[in-house]
Amino acid sequence: MHRNILEARVISAVMRVLDGNRTEDDFIEVKSVWPEPKKYIRQFAGAANRAAGSDIVLIVGLDETRHRLTPAGDEDPESWWSQLQSGFDGGAAPDLVNNLTVEIPSGGSVVAFAFQTDGAPYVIKNPEGKGPDLEVPIRKATKTEWARRSDLIRMLARRVHTPNAVPLDSQLQVIWHDAQQSNLQGIGAQVEHIRMTVQLNMFIEHLAPEYAMLPHYSMRAELEVGGERYSMTVDEYRPSDKIRSLSPHGVEVRSDGLLLTGPGKAFVWCRCTLTRVSREKALEWQSATVRLTMPVTGNDAPVRIAFPFERSELLPERPHNHYETLAVFRLPRGA
Image (cartoon, rainbow, N blue to C red):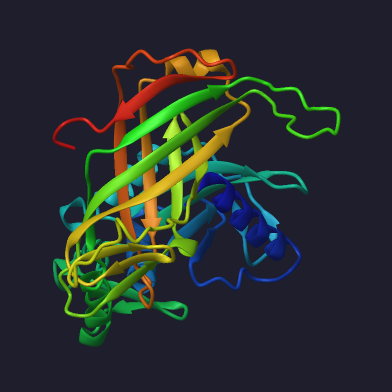
């Protein structure tokens, strides 16, 4: 979940509680103080198993009963999460994708976490020492219970129908554009900016007997570089008859998305424009990561794939008046 999306979602939930209501979101957990890991793990795992593919958010520092903010304390989020994570069997816990302190417009702040639950079902070590050593909890309404067979089948069915994706050789370009002046009609004015473009190549392991559709309109991409995260635009592909796939079995790259009838290669174009990054700062970048999320039609668990880029040798190019290629990033061998 991108930082801006998480922040907006948290502020909305907090303001609703401060106005005397409840969050009314099944995938948002609210705690007035830091929950003790051993006592909280069963409730947390139950919420993750119920989400089973959807993101869940934990807000610390909000009293949902008294409708007020509370001091969260000096707990180290990384240390707290490490303790909670250790209670999962094999360490297979939900993925922590973002953690930040969110300033509330009316004053005060809360600590927020966002987790991905694609790995459900989650198994925890029994924290109470009674009953079985391992347990698969699930949240139902306000209670946390043992998961039934039907619950496990539901969680596993979503995973079975979500194909895996493997990154292939891809190239991320960093291009600097200078500030161009507008003409007499005021057209063409442009500020200095950095433009990031990438074609993400991948192999999609779709082995299910039925077709699957990954629509372009719901794809999301995020760039992490220089310690910051930026949203990327996923461009619609316009295939021509000459290069249109004629294979009756595999992955077809279409204008509306990726149609999966079997395993095969695919690609997605992404780009973003950075106006608050200087040319000098961009020249310092040595690595970057692009994370692509592709929802599957009819399935709550999306395809997620990360492309870890490393700076590559920059080949000489003909000088241009208004732009310059600052860097090229490629996937490291074996990635």
